[in-house]
Amino acid sequence: EAGVAQSPRYKIIEKRQSVAFWCNPISGHATLYWYQQILGQGPKLLIQFQNNGVVDDSQLPKDRFSAERLKGVDSTLKIQPAKLEDSAVYLCASSLTGTAYGYTFGSGTRLTVV
Amino acid sequence: DQQVKQNSPSLSVQEGRISILNCDYTNSMFDYFLWYKKYPAEGPTFLISISSIKDKNEDGRFTVFLNKSAKHLSLHIVPSQPGDSAVYFCAASASGNTPLVFGKGTRLSVIA
Image 1 (cartoon, each protein chain N blue to C red):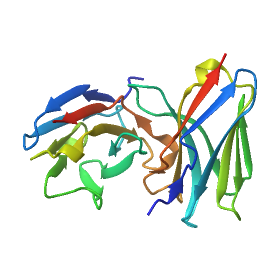
Image 2 (image 1 turned 120 degrees about the vertical axis):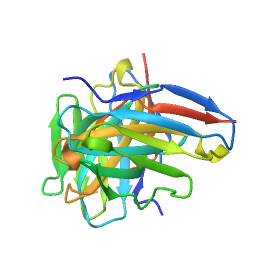
Image 3 (image 1 turned 90 degrees about the vertical axis):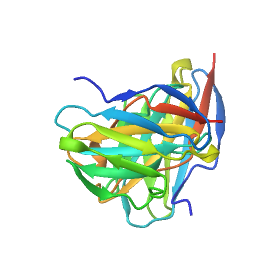
Image 4 (image 1 turned 30 degrees about the vertical axis):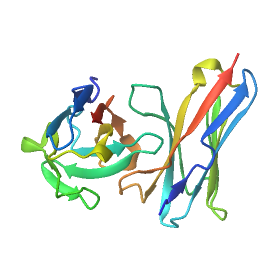
């Protein structure tokens, strides 16, 4: 079974620029999550999708972050404009059952905002 | 407001000895707990889990203990091996249906 694919692996941008991350979950996994992991912290949920619908986006800074999951498969997370404090690893995870039992994480995208 | 707390940022253990990683939680609705292991430049990988109906779950060298009254769980690794050196995250969910909430992690170093 192929894992969760994320790209790019690394990205460096200047503040106020925009950036987008892509995630392709495990085939058949209906639930997709985006987490933000700041250095020295644990992953923090940004948004949860069930198929192509949003289940939880309560912690997504909607003034600058947006995410979509068209056709219920792959997903993109966008930041516009980026701030220095957005420097983090952005992790995508997918789950077959939509529960905590079956998360599989991708390798993440490391974003550095300078 | 941290709902899952790992108060030890790092732990150093000699090879062959026991590693004990601790985790505390504040949300009494949490009833499913997991440990993830993370190597540099990789995503977290699932290690072991425990449901609140149990107080112990064992998988090879890894054992997780849950003390519900104290809202505390711990991960024991016996014997510790150099390949166990990684960051370990404690995570929790309510009814297994809510997204995982993670602690800050503990960096384990196993010294040969």
